[in-house]
Amino acid sequence: MDVRTRTGTGRTALFRNRQGRHGRPPRQRLFLVALGAALAGLLAATIIVALTGGPGGSGEPEMEPASGPVARVGAGVPGDWPAWGFSHTQNSVDGERGPAKALADLAGTPVVQVTPIMGWGVDNPQPRPGEYNWASLDRRMETIKRTKGAPVITLCCAPDWMKGGPAGKTDWTKLELAVEPEHFDDFAAMAAEVAKRYPQVKYYTVWNEFKGFWYPPGNRWDYQGYTTLYNKVYGALKKVDANIRVGGPYMVMNSNAPGGKYGPPSELKGSWGSMDQRNLDAIKYWSEHKKGADFIVTDGHSQPVQRQVKLDDFQALTKFSDVTRWLRALEPDLPVWWAEWYVEPVPTDWTKERRYAVHTAAMMEFVRGGAASALYWSPQTTTATDCPGCLWSGAQAGGGATPTLTMLQNFNRWFRPGTELVNVKVSDPAVRALAQDEQMVVVNGSAKAVRPQIDGKTIDLGPYEVKWLGR
Image (cartoon, rainbow, N blue to C red; front, side):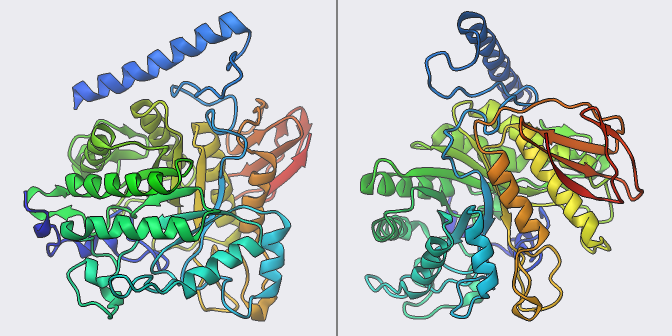
């Protein structure tokens, strides 16, 4: 297959902007293999408990079975794993003037902070072969350090000359084109230079959503091309530092609405709909042919690609758990990393209270499903007063943390990897709760005020209200 034909006319539609970022998440035999892996994991965990009195008898973290809700946060990853946080985008806090309050609030309770190497506020790092321009990436990395963030780098995107364009120029309309095969080695070498320049960064994701890696003649992803690039980057990074942790394939998990009329058969489905099988096939190819990996990366939207179909906001979130369990069954030894996640339909009439409630419930779903990481895509805009879903307000509005940022910080404080979860009884099915020994978060998924019994106590909750409560 000539992978150079992959940039066909249908590619652009796959990546239409969502809040300045992405498009809406545009075999029976293998299913049995995955199911067998899940059952084998469950049996192994049962044996460990019987012999040692609990998981991890050797003292090493143990991956929990992928068949149901986990008992501990993070599905067996170390306590210092970069679990919860956000990605920097075009309008972030790395500008020279702040806002200062946002910087202070970020530093108050540090979280994971992700940045790409090019695009979304970062300049072309290598405009010509052998000529590097680190200024904007240096500035962003310095901001992450200043705000005490755990740094993560996404190795996307690529200079124009690696994509068939001229050296010395940057056409930002072609940002999402894939690296040409003859420049895979050049991209890997650039990744190695990034790793050398920022030795404090130990976590890297390779590329982003298979951008440009679409193969129109086959109506599928060019997973061979992506995996070849991934393997070259993986080897280059490990050569710089064997302790660097590398993840892929960063596939967007598009799904179709429930009902057979909305999409072809898929091995992964639920009340939220069915997964695009082409995306699953790409992940499985990468899984079988990768040189190595330290975690598996995905992203996606809880709602289906058919925008006219509106699912229940909260029920749709089970997609995140189902996908996480499918990935954990496919790669039982690899933590699952959600590099981005989205929940809001387009167009939307959500109030800020409803948005915050669904965001919080989504994080609860990631925890219960066994995800090791979930990173919010910051939708910051240049608007100073109205920025739905943003992590901090504009400078004119004070620049401080929004409830969404505070929520991410609370998860980073109270639900770190390894935290033991505690079951609590909730009398109202519209209310969700997630608890550990000291703290609990509850979400009213109803547009009406409720008074449920939670953990033996009566709690008053307003419409879509979220409360963090001590236990």
